[in-house]
Each structure stands twice: as C-alpha cells, then as structure tokens.
Image (cartoon, rainbow, N blue to C red; front, side, top):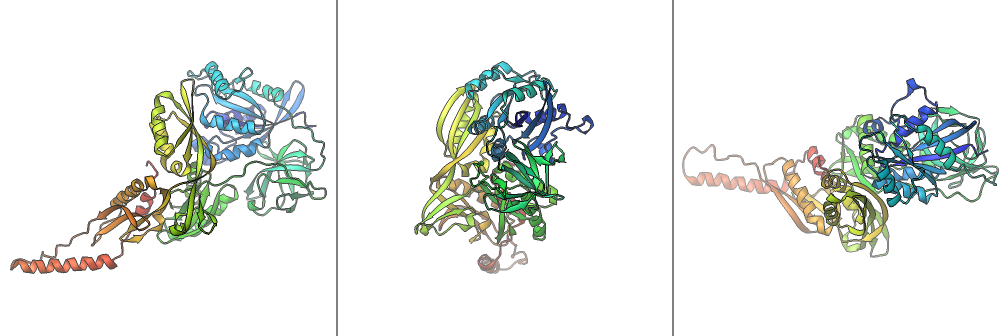
Length: 598
C-alpha cells in the first residue's frame, strides 16, 4: 500500500534554513537520540558543516504517527547553491511534493525562484514554509504577499516555523501528510526503478540510491540497467534513518539503496531505469537533466613529485561525485596535471579545497574557462575546453560560446550599479520587474564573463544584497580570440586564454602588468607581451640588472670605460637571444589568479 508513503524534497535559497528544518524533523520523528543529535546532521562532509552549505543531496526515512496511522516519510535535503541545481533536479524526480523554505526576514531570492521552477516543471505539489519567524526582523505577512506576487503560489496554508527552536514543526508534518499526494498506484507489476544517485563506500562498494515506481527489489534478484543492458545481482537492500539499515525488500513508492557488486561508479548512469532481468521493461522512464560540466581548468601540483598523490586524490573524489570530470594534461610550464570539468566556480573551489585538505597537496589551478564550439572550414564541429588546443585561425569558420540566462534580485537603490556591471560583461537585458522594493533583472550573459569575477563584483556593487541564479541557454557566435602571453618572445601556453576581442586588450595588459611585478630581474631585458596571433596588443618590460663593469677603472682615459660598457652591451644582447628566463612557480600562481579579488 502506498497511501501511507510521502516522498518530498526540501528546497530553498542558500542559508534559508532547510538543513536545520531537516534536523528538527529527524529529531521529532525519533530517528536519532538527543545525545547523538548535532547540527546539519545530513551534511556528512566537514566542508559542508564549516561553510554551512549543503553540497550533496541526502535522504532519510522518517516514521511518523498521525491520527492513529503510521506514515513513512522519505525526506531529501537538497543543496541551495546555483552550481548544484542538478542535485536538486534529480532529488525532485524521486518525489511527489516539495517543501519551499523561505526566510521570513529575507524573502524570495534568486535561487528560491530557480528551485520553484524546477519543482513546477516536475509537476510537484508545493508547501510553503516561512522559517525564522522568531527573528526580530521577520515580516511573515509581507513575505507571504511577496511569494504570491513573485512566484504565484498561494500562501493561504503557509506554515510559519522556527526550525532553530523547533516552533510549529508538528504543523509541517501535518501539512506533508494532508497536502502532499502519496505515490501513484501502478497497474504495472514489473520492476521499474529510477537510479537517483550512486557513490562509492569503502566497505560496501558502489551504493545505488533508487526510487521504486512499480514492483519491488529484494536480495538475490537480478536487475538490468536499460541504458547499457548491464545485469547485476542484488547483494543487499536498505534504507537511511540516517544510518544505513538493511531491510528485506523495497516496494512500490519507496526510496532506498542497494548494492549489487558494481565495481565503479562509472558503471551506473544517474537517471537510468532499473528493471527485473527475468521480466524486463522495454521502455525507460524519463529521468532528469544529467550534470554537464560548464567550467574547466587545469590542476597541477606545485611539487611535481606530488603528481601520484594528486592522481589518487582526484580518482577518489570522482568516485563520489559523478559530476566531476577529469583527464590527464601535460604543460611545458607546469608539468603533469589534470584538466578538470566542474558545474561552476563553487564546485571548482570545493574540489580544490578537498584535495588540499584531505590529501595534503599544494596545487596550482589555471584560469577557469568554458567550452567553446568551433566550426572548421571543412565542416567539422569541435568542442574546445583547453585554450592550448586552439586550432589555426585560418582554418576556423566560426567560434560560438555558451550564453546563460541570469536572474538577479537586487534592492532598487543598487539597480543602476548592477545594470552597469551586466552591460560591461556584454549582457543583454531581457526583462525588468519591481517587486516589493526590489528589482528582478533578467539578463542574457556570456558564461565566459561570469566565470572570472562577476559574482564577486556583483556582491561588491550591491553591498552583498543581490542574489544571483543562472541557467545555460544556448551557444552564440562571437568575435572570440586566443590571447597568448609571450615572455622573452617565447609563448607560455599555461597562461593562454580565450576571450572576446573587445576585452582582450584590458585582460592582456592586466596579465602583463602582474607578471612584471612577479618575475625577478635578470642580467638582460625581458619583454612580456600579450598577443593575438602575430599582433602584440600589450607589453611590459622588465629592466635588466646592471653590473658596474667600470668599477675597476680608477683613472685613465674615458675610452677605457666606453670600451668596457660596449663589451657589456654586446654581452647583454647575446644573453637576451640565448638566455633562459627563470619564472618562479609563485609567478604562475599569482598570474593565474587573475579573476580573483584576493
């Protein structure tokens, strides 16, 4: 019977209290003893606790008695940051309803809108939860009007709570049971299960999180993946409470995990349909949007001797993060490393920080770039991730770059500064609305402009009050060029980047100026140049160190000194031709931090 089951996700803007609400619900349902309770119980990573954010979606089964009946509630706590919206979409695909948590003091933010749209696309029932009503700055009545105006959701039955103090949490349980629909009864009796997530456990191997739509899964049965027809035998079946608990079977409408002797996470495809090998389905379920890396950068160890440790660390992280892509890369300047793909800048920052912390590594990352689409004159279309692989310009017919649609919510007093920023970044305004003292700006922007310093500058010009969310739209043709940095007339591929022609000169001058301060002086002059093809667009020169060759002349004719100076001049000219410029490692690190405001 599925009438007693409710599957729901918690969605919200970052820092609106969804993890705290999950904590209170777990505590109230009695899943965890009070002595074992801790903040952000479902956030298992040290980094999640430290930053107060959710990175990986987590699930837990709650058992809750209500009006004489026992209900099974499958709760999924989702991330709130724009980079992890794919985690939200795959969580919603396993649910019939969602709790929309809105901070009663801050109101609707950009990610609130994005997550609500994802829930509406998935045709979910939504319950509005106003959190932090105990704060002095809380204005629940105004925020409810704002939700109705901006999102269009009725707040007649909105639940007002304080997740921190536990106020009114029982009303949340009542709303889930009364207002969210149970899983639909299926006439199909064959097994149909959606693969929601998979990760590697050092004791149990690959664990697969599934939502059962019809049929059941039990130990010993053989299951088939419809995407590749791989067949596996189920070893164990269980649920999270949030600790792992082995059960006999998972039935219709339930959410749980299984292990089946799968060796690597790459053998499973998130969004795949799982069925019974003896009586299989022929048509797969429609899953959800797969994760697509949008930001790429090279990661190299500062000490080349750490390459093996870096490889081991990246392989281990990739086991538990299917959205993280990597391949080996060899740079003349930086040595052996990896070209890595991420969902966004926060995802990149999280992976880098985990590599540094968990594997004790010192790392360099190249400037982040996006995937460009290059159409060659012979008709071939190639995706370009690494500026070093940029083909000969004479063979290129067209270059396209990814564009996004951004939603920015900002107080009206800062709107002018934000519009100026978006215009500077080649943005095109699509829409502008005023909502309750704030402006909702919708812009189309090139993703390449976003990955450098857009978010930091947005926070700066809005004094931290603007919220930002985006989604990838399509590729558009643009006047894009490869900016190459030459040091002593030698190209340095590690510093190459692809940029729009209109901003190439500023960016080249910025790198040249920074390198001039970072590279130590030599015995000869060192030119630092930024070039597009054979045309130099920016230049700085590091002056030569000068040895006083006339110091030994205590007298005599001036021609003696001139002869020594001429000899020195010839030597410097020869040295400039054949001399090798020693570029310290920290010069690369600092130059590649061009987009940072550090």
